[in-house]
Amino acid sequence: MNLKELKESLKTDSIGKKIYFFRQINSTNEIAKNFANNGEEEGTIIIAETQTHGKGRLNRNWSSPIGGLYLSIILKPKLLPNYVSKLNLLTAIAVAKTINQFGLSPKIKWPNDVLINRKKICGILTEISTKENKIKYIIVGIGINVNIDINLLPRELQKTSTSVKNELGLEISIADLIIKLLNEFEKLYDIFKKGDFIYIRKEWKKFSSTFQKNVKVITKNEVIVGYAFDIDEAGALLIKNDKGIKRVISGDCIHLKE
Ligand code: BTN
Image 1 (cartoon, protein in one colour):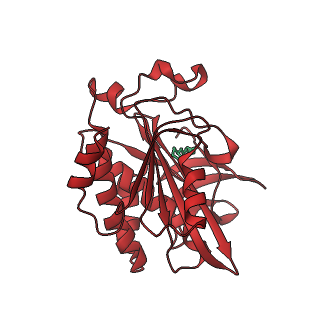
Image 2 (image 1 turned 120 degrees about the horizontal axis):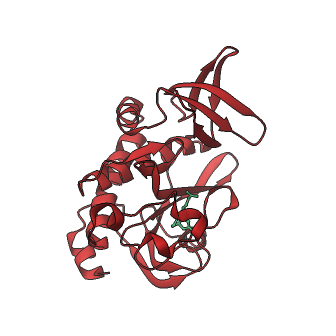
């Protein structure tokens, strides 16, 4: 990756002001947590060319071959911890808008998978540290299959994954992708900090493949089946069924056939 090109072309105010780049590390989220604990400021980002222990949601692994983007953002917003789900949505929207700029048509599957033609192209893992109900820091980890040949991924993921290269039939500049991504992220993050949820909800509806679908959401404690008709101010998915309306903060979502 061309770090010089990246630093020179980045026009953001705070996101990416400081960039740490590693050829290989265990997990950018783990390093980001370490750095955040040691005083790194809001907006610092950690990028790796490859990860040995990339982490996915729900304790899964995130396969991280060279050619992908593995990036974590350190955030220290002065907000209450229950804003995290919204940050998840916001990040998925930023990724979708970025990938869209390369001529692709991404969709967001709730909570924060970005898909193309129902195949996963990006995963987001947001981790939070709190103290006395205040946010110490939030790490937003983003993994995008950019210039990856799908056959480099574990066999069980090959049918359900895609990459930018796979979709476009050519490789793109990862530095260019990062510049666009951090720009989109900063714009949405500023809107989010101002408390404007209307715009975020509108953008979510535009990109969401879950909105207005019959879904089955599996959470830690229950399985909810119903019609996903909106998200609320906290970023929870609102599902309507014959028992009423259910709010779901996190879980695995399956779209049911109409
Ligand atoms: C998912 O399960 O869909 C979330 C995957 C998140 C992967 C990214 S890659 C950069 C950052 N560092 C990690 O270890 N995980 C996240």
